[in-house]
Image 1 (tube, rainbow, N blue to C red):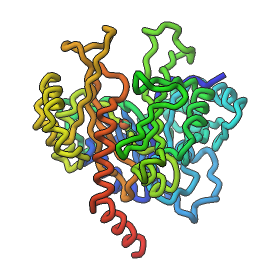
Image 2: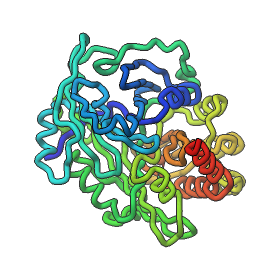
Image 3: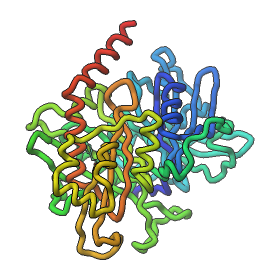
Length: 420
Ligand SMILES: O=C(O)C(=O)Cc1ccc(O)cc1
Ligand SMILES: [Fe+2]
C-alpha cells in the first residue's frame, strides 16, 4: 500500500549563502520572509508567496558532516544532514495525516530508504511528527510531516518574522501555488522513477501529448531536441487521509515532470544540469500565477531575467494570430519572453470562452551561481498539461543561452571565485 499525501507543505533549498539567496527570492521574486530559525549551527529562513513556501537552509560544510544530529535539531526536518557540493533544491516536503502509518507503508516497500525514521519535534506552540525518505532522483528527499498539532508560525524552533520589506501586493504578483516540479535525470532512469512514485505515493501518469506512448513517455527526438518527458500527478487526500472516491471531489496537487536527455541529438541542457549539479535533481519549479503578464512585468522590474525564444517566435504569422485570438498583444508577450500554446479540445469541461485552452509560460535565468536550477511562471487558461510548442520554444531558448557567451562566462566566473 502506498502512503497518501494530503498536500505539498514546502520545498527546501540548501545553499552556501542563505542571506544572498533569500535576498534574491525577496527582492526579485517578491516572496516574504515569514519565519526564521538561527542557531550556532543553522540558519534557516521560510519564505512565502501565495501558498508556495520555500525554506532556505545553509549547506553544512564538509567539516560539519558526519556530526550526527539528533532529531531535536529542527535542521533535520529538511534532510540537510548531508553535504552537497553546490547550491541545490533538495527536499520536497509533503503533509500527511499519520506519519507513523505512512512510514510503515513505505518501509514495507522495496527501494524505500529512510534518512530519518518517524520522530517528533516540539516547542511551546505544539509539536510535529516527521520522517524523511530518499527519493530515486539524485539528492532529492521527501520529508513527510504532520503539522496538525502545531500552532506556531511555521515549524518548531522557527520564530515569526514580520517582514519589513514586503513583496509586491497580490494584484501585481498573483503567484498562488507550486504548479509543477521538473527533475533532470540521467538516461534510462525514467521507468524506475515513475514506478517508485506510483508504488510509494500512488502517483499516476498523465499524458503530455495525445499521441504519447504509455511506456515511452513524450519523446522529442529530432531537429536538435533530444528529450523524453514523463509527467505524473497525485491527488490531495481528505483530512482523514482517505483517497476521495469521486472524481469531482479529488483535487490534483503539484505535478511532477521527469526530463531525460536522449543522446542522438548531441549535448543538451539536461546534460548540463547533470554536470553542473553533479547528478540528478530538481531542474526547475513552475510557479502558478493568475496573471502571467502582470507577474512577469513586476518581476522584470525587480531585476529577474527571463529566457527569450528566438525573435522569430513572435513575428511568425500563425503565432501572432494565435496570440491575438487569445487576447494578448504579441509585442507585450515578446517583451518578457512569454510563450503561448493553444490546445483545441473536443470535450467541454474547462474550456475558455473562445472554446480553446491556453497555456502561458516564461522561464527565468538560473537562480544559483551554477547553470542548474531555474524558476518558471505558468498561467493555465483551461490547459492542464504541457504544450509541445512551448516545450520546443523553451528548449531552443535555453539551448541558445548555453551556446552563446553567457553560459561560458558564468562558468569561468565560478572557476575564478572557487580559486580565490
Ligand atoms: O514545459 C515545461 O514547463 C516542462 O517542465 C517540460 C520541460 C522540462 C525540461 C526541459 O528542459 C524543457 C521542458
Ligand atoms: Fe516546467
